[in-house]
Image (tube, rainbow, N blue to C red; front, top):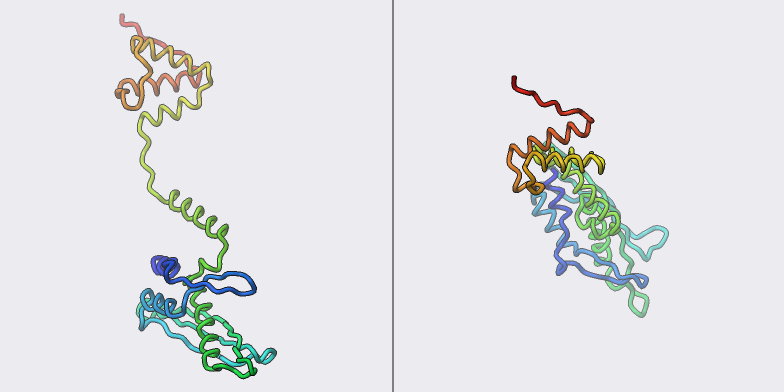
Length: 222
């Protein structure tokens, strides 16, 4: 289901997108043929169907045709079932004499608009109706979830030392440097690439001792 949703919501290629101007605002839309093609490819030609519940001229404003469409999607060999509805409209075009140009085209346009609205609830072309801020927030949230779900590697001894050293105060870090100089015979401070296992073991032990304020006691052989 997750993979199916990702395929449904995949943005269309810019060459497929179309623009229309309404009330001075430029809007981007996807032709109904591309929406149907997306549903056929992702859901399967024999897995979904469309039912026109109603398509008629609006009772309040007869210059508009309003359509009510339902999409039924059967998945998992018919065991699963999803239904989505959409309502669309189309303004009737008239010629200069006031006559209707083609009422059939307006009915078809209203049904197409309703189908796209229903498909949009499944994710098809949904990105065109959402704000950039909402999409960006979702992407950040998804990236965070993926990062949290990703398997985390075990910290290396060097990572453990670095974590310990960050907890030390400035004075404690200076004490650690002095201890290292004494232990190594004046060698430069080691790095992840140059430190040997013996070096890292000493640094972890010494950083721990300094952090807790413990006293180093040396055993004298008798």
